Length: 354
Image (cartoon, rainbow, N blue to C red):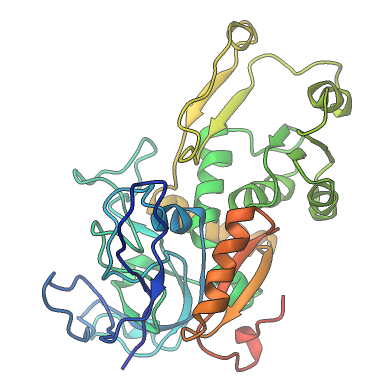
């Protein structure tokens, strides 16, 4: 029977609790199951089930374990990212058979540039009662409209690292900032996490000049290796002046755009009169639409972008190493995505070499 990893409910207040991971004694393959009954899913006419060989963590998963996201579920498998091979299909999805695919990380948002069309909002995969599907399990069954063919130049590990942070970074840079163009100056703060690195890679591929900030000089140096023009440590006094000195002009140009995402642990930010006088724009953003996901995957394929992976844990039975990935996220030591390898590599595109 397919295995899965969920959270275990324990007592504690939001932000103070930390739900343990567990492998339920009843394991299952999920696609929209009844709340009280979780049978093995069978492919419908348009549903290609696929073995997810790799999954990846996101900060959202860490926040869910702290009950900092709403509606946590203790029966839905955790994680929203996944790459796998289609092993069986319904009658209307046979063209997907044996293809290696990546899964769209949410449902309910087709193409609107302003936000989800669904009245119930955007239902992100993994660990909540708003969507019964999560990817940290051996087999899942989804509608064919929810998958894209994985770019051939990516290993399974790299492809699994792409969906959620890639979509978030794409919307932030391309849709919201409108500055994914050659010669534009882009600042990426807090380099090292998945979204920030995706924005860096997308902007560099578009020909933009990218600068970064971090509390770690080592991460700044690694970002330069990826394509950043330079960076500064926000822990050092006068970092703003240092950053300004790196720019090709003596002061930031007026009319810039600030795109803000991921404010779970910092839900407020200051907005000064100086920002108004500079004619800056502040735009909030979150993940993105199914169309943006498709466009992002196509750009990654065209530009041969390879998501950066920090560490891989092997096996669903390996809760110790899976929890260690979460600890790296807790202390911010990672540079790139954290991935769980569920099925051993078998060569070719299934290689876990990074």
